[in-house]
Picture: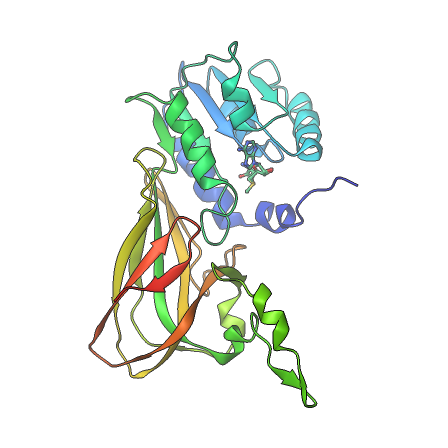
Length: 282
Ligand SMILES: C[S@@+](CC[C@H](N)C(=O)[O-])C[C@H]1O[C@@H](n2cnc3c(N)ncnc32)[C@H](O)[C@@H]1O
């Protein structure tokens, strides 16, 4: 049975997220502007673009159930003459010869806790195909931040050993090597560094297969991985998913294959690949 991701509920109740996006829409001058939204979800923000003066909103949704929900919401909003909804993915839509719009604004909120897991790279390719130099793209920047972290409890969300003299570690071949969502506040942990910028993402520049970053330890200890979160820039508005921010997004934990014994004051170098796997760089 087809269904929807259950995070739609938490996401649509995330007032800080919704307010920041609505404020970003209000900050724009939408007069005579064509908007293209990728991933309409319930249709909420397409309706807000229309209600705030966009001349036309084109939007798409790849999940058929969300598409039909959005269609109902848009039809009852009074803006269905301004909003064109396509029940398909942005890639399928953009490939169509008769879809040759020139949007002034492109908006997408298709981010998971580790930024890229909901199709960031594919969506970026779609945006690059349809945008020109004057197209305003929201989010305009996404900053990924992280800390060196020591936390056996978080490591144990991804690794097993034995129970009652029975070795169950065979399961570890299916551990996550990239990242997984975690509500870091719920687990005992020690931060071994200050929060540090790991990577800047946007929907315009060419995505390298790997990027590099360094973090300086502020304490001695065993580093089990990097805890990351992000900060979205939507013009003047911002949304953060940092611990204790109250965001519906979890943080992301990137396990290190080999733990690092870090020393206060020393800088550690890492490679982040395009699957968001982090490894130490020697
Ligand atoms: C995180 S939700 C956000 C929904 C809505 N924009 C909002 O902010 O409330 C992202 C939605 O985009 C859809 N989606 C993801 N990638 C897509 C793509 N490439 N084309 C069309 N829909 C996409 C998902 O199915 C999901 O419903």
